[in-house]
Image (cartoon, rainbow, N blue to C red; front, side):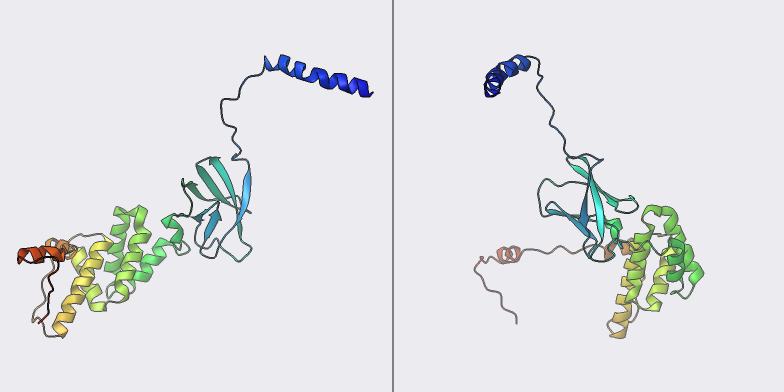
Amino acid sequence: MAKCMEQQEKYQPQVFLEEKKYLKPILDKIKTKSPSLSLTYQVRKDNTVPIKGNRYSVPKGTYKGPHTYVKVSYISETELIIRDIDTDKKLAQYQIPADKGNLVKNNNHKRDNNVKISVLIDQIADRFSDPAKAKDFMENIRKEKSRYIRDQLNLIESAMKDSSLESNNKALEFCMKNHLYRATDFRDAVAHYEKDKAKLGNGLVTEPVALTPENIEKIKVTPKIRDMSEYINAFGGNDNATIYNR
């Protein structure tokens, strides 16, 4: 028996050399990440999933406690899909960063989609003196920017938060009169009327400045901030000069 095993071991290298003639090299890298394979990862309180050194966002409300998990599968070596562990519904799809330590997110995941757009429009419209006009304004925004309507409504709501009813009504009137169906224009108009109101209250002006579609663009312009060295050089000074306040 032992002699037989010795002979078998002796002839194995010869058999391999003979078979090697017919073996073909594998040119393509074997892929271990397959869409059919998935791994389970825990969801954090901030609705992100830590995966191999990076964090990926999932829709708001995905986290439902410390034992919330999702499934992660790979389309390729550079792309992954995150799915609900129970329903298999796709929650997110991302390109995998080349390095580590990144927060990879989808801004849509921050939205609270529980409130329908029509309901949200009605809720915001009720905060104006003329809800019907406000609703008309927002419906026009909806027609022009249907893809971003929730962001537009959130911006309008944010602009109204710390401003007076008077300024909100004036801004609405201005936007409707000039057919400006953008939340940014409404926000800038509110800021203008709030500033005028403050100046009138402090006695700095006796009459507010009329707002027009032309000068609302000026409100958005950020003044250029010059480097102090420009002023020093203009007065023939040097970098070591000291400026005193009188």
